[in-house]
Length: 104
Image 1 (cartoon, rainbow, N blue to C red):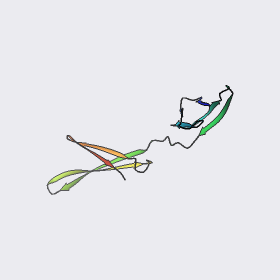
Image 2: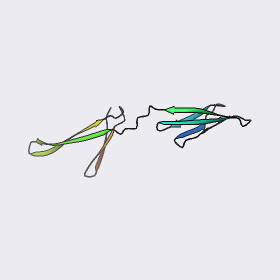
Image 3: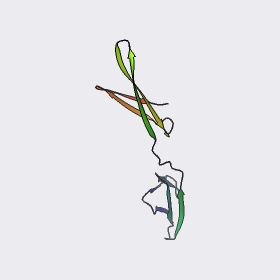
Image 4: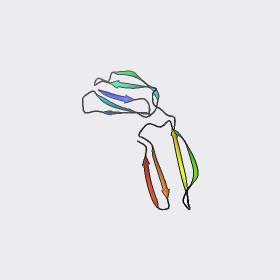
């Protein structure tokens, strides 16, 4: 048996089991897959995916000055909204030092 996608947004690949396929979809789709047997008979299978989040998260930055004795520092608060938990990474660069902060 062979299974083919009728959409460039859907990737179909063979799994390790006979007649079992891995289907990868990266965005919402309303399409069909075509199953073809060894005799060449074909049937269309509807594939509708509606639950993939395609909205980018939003962010805002609040900067304020903080006095530490005679030294004036900056305090930065970054608010990230609508992001998946444990998937936010923030890179800060100060002079030549790069830090990666991950929200957990």
